[in-house]
Image (cartoon, rainbow, N blue to C red; front, side):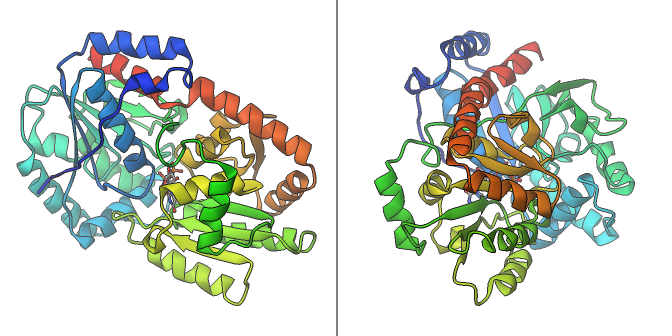
Length: 409
Ligand code: UDP
């Protein structure tokens, strides 16, 4: 029922010289108090989207610093994932309500997975709404339970929130990316604000030579040398890929040779991805300068790495966003970002750092043009962005924050 995800073995020592030393010291310090603790991370998918991206790096490093950590994903039906996407959208404020069938599918699947959950963990960290009902349905036992919410739940649809809220009372703590995301009347006593982070040593972020990047992108059909802007996102309306195409077309009237790549992953738990992909294909048909790629056509971590390094600008035109790991990933590579002023994005790009924040398609086009026409300014933004990520958004900082919470609990 619950699937254990295999992860690699990885050592914190590899981060010396990359991550500020005091952060590594702090992490070792926090880990000492928790040596031998059994931790379970529970989520809905082993691939696609930010949570699986995070856990693939978090779990090996927690094991390396002396905890005993597992990552498991729930097993679920298409009906369940249809229901949880509606739940996700509702929590982000969509007016559409959960149907009775959605609620029934959610509860049935949650019960089955809760029944399959082993005891014996000291901490169970549950990511996002998909497995959130399991704390109550399984019973807490002797573990401490943490709900790690990665999305902006500040203004949820009231019906959707009323449905989920009742299942959250079993948690000992809830963690949000920003305090502003905490929903009204959260029935959890302890609330923490911890921002996510990227792994500078994962295949997606490790250093790659520009020659290798060129070979990778040439291979998949980008015209090089050539000018390129890219958005890397799940195909999801909240990421506004159609707005990106419209903004790009405005820019093309001034930079006619500019190419656009929309790189999107299909996550197991996101059934809307294909619909959005089909709509985008229709928009892009007949335009040889717009490229659409998915993880199912071979665009994986190294390819994303190459896109984030070789694009003149990375666009992330989100309308709602949790954190937006792609922003830190791009800034870490020194590439400036044009991004929607949403969720955790301004945390990564305060004024004058990393790139430009926008509130509309027109502003997005203007910002792209500004950066395309001023390479010096672009470089400065990229390098200030990299410095900010180094200080605040690399993985060991996230681990230190999370372990501090676990030790307190
Ligand atoms: N991603 C990817 N391939 C894609 C699209 C996205 O590997 O085609 C990755 C991206 O690099 C990032 C994660 O998926 O690591 C998306 O995380 P983010 O926080 O930006 O958004 P979420 O999908 O969690 O809403």
